[in-house]
Image (cartoon, rainbow, N blue to C red; front, side):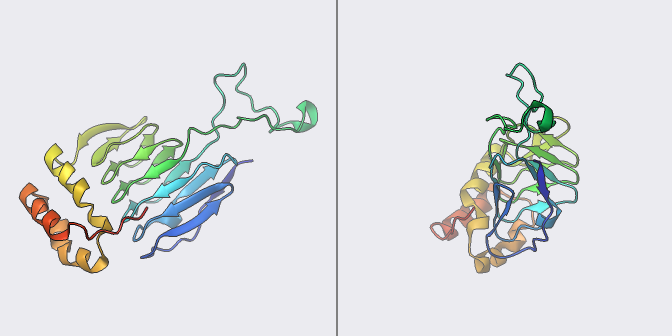
Length: 207
């Protein structure tokens, strides 16, 4: 049976946990738009993990399973429909999932995006409106289209690596408040190195 949920999850400064059917959902602190996500699952038990400081627009859907078996003789879901005729026992492995969905920190997901099971979206990535994400998206990449493809990266490889090392989302709230001006401007490599020196060893990893 398909289950889906659009819960009234308010933004929080704490990590949040809930379930949709058999699927555990975890969201990191300060992410917003969680109540806008429609999560679909069919009892496969795949998990959805969302990082900290994510921005989620209206109409985003995450499909954690429901895959039909293209490696079987038929893709038809015997045991799940017309059970009075063909038998009620579900057959193991159908419906199927490609695995958990992992969304990194500081990810922006545009309106109407669809994310399929087994996908990892890296820290700082941008998913364009109505993109259909069928494979992994690298950190700080911008992915658009159906199927979603990377059209550019947000920053140079050097800056991207420094941002990933800084992992500003794992700093204490009082430290983040101090660097909001830098976070709200174009990143420069030298400035990032200075921040790394200042905050080395002061992070609190979460989701």
